[in-house]
Image (cartoon, rainbow, N blue to C red; front, side, top):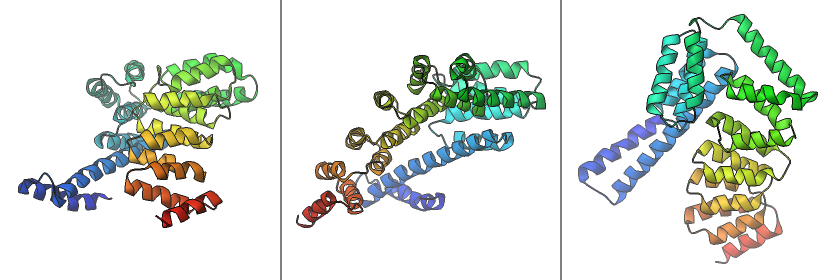
Length: 322
């Protein structure tokens, strides 16, 4: 649903309110409009955040600041993270006062934010800077660190651990931090696995770092990451993190946990994502038989109808005979 559709349908809200209706078609339409508005706003915010992150990776600070401001205005669930990265981009542009203003707003509006520690570190850096755009020497130094991390992955990854921990706890750019996370995920030592697990659980990590950690755990071929991912899913309300865990379940073909998501998750979009990652007919058939919501059951049956297996065919015949 686009912005114009929402404006047109929003008239129903006024009509329903004027009529004083709490039930019936108008009231139902009004509730649907309200829900659609929340979904549209959420998607708009997520898209702006993603575009801002992409701009950061390209060093397009002005563009990044703009997109993160849009994410904040859309009241995205990651608005606090958007404020932090907007302040970072403004800092890179040499707009010291604006960066400090955004950091102050972040502290005031999100006092319990997991970005608080990062914000404090960035605030110190902004105060110490001259407020001028970053120098070529600073940029080159960061590029050197990126090359160094790349090299250590292929030679002596264990020696990278102290540097990785320092980068992850400091005010580095998203490129440098994400690369450090990548290197961390390649190291098989217990210390590295423990640190990656802690970050995935959100311990002493901002949401972006947690998302990266979950993504790299999901790409691991080791099955012992699955209990960690299940713990992450149960312990977070962040839809982006949950979505990434579901993708990891799909990568590992963990049908049991995907079925559990479909059965217990309240968010319809997450339930559908779990369905998307179920590739075998048997668990889908079990879900279809147990599903009480006729609309969602129809969605499951539709997916089964696209499968070419005897189990799927038998169930479809069963449906036709009902």
